[in-house]
Image (tube, rainbow, N blue to C red; front, side, top):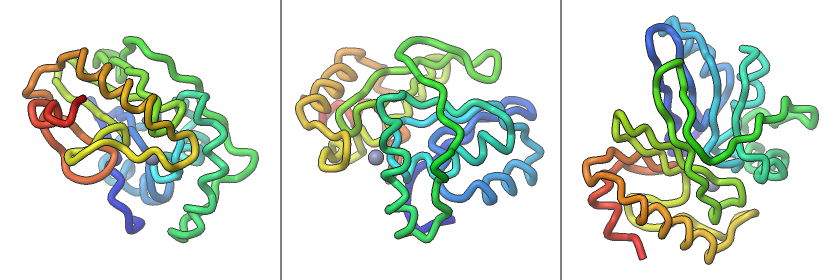
Length: 198
Ligand SMILES: [Zn+2]
């Protein structure tokens, strides 16, 4: 796997699975799915920076599944190739399979797992977070980290909008014992994350 600490998340139920932020090489993901006997059902991305999507278009094509990402981040997909070059990862081709648009609201994955999609622009225009109320698990992408807020100097970044998104997360008042997986670095708990809210 490439030398970056993006937190990809695989959620499985029975022999079906969904991948969040499919970073790295699609070949490596294929090997993982094969070794665990899992069938891929969908791919979701918190946002369109290359270290969160590098394997998504190719994996979606190979497995004939949808790749979901907010379309406001579509323009970031090919921009990210310069980063993939740096990591010596395969480029995303110009004719990549486009993502299916993702909207805020409640949906289900793997038939029965409820998932809330929370609009969270600021780190990028189309950023979202994913929350699983039954399991009290939140995937924040790069909106917020264990030790602070996301950066806003990359394409699509806007500090004021990011602050509003974080304030919005604060207003949701998720339980303190919600397990929080950030886009990079160590996981945390909601109770600790609340101390960084404005
Ligand atoms: Zn990012």
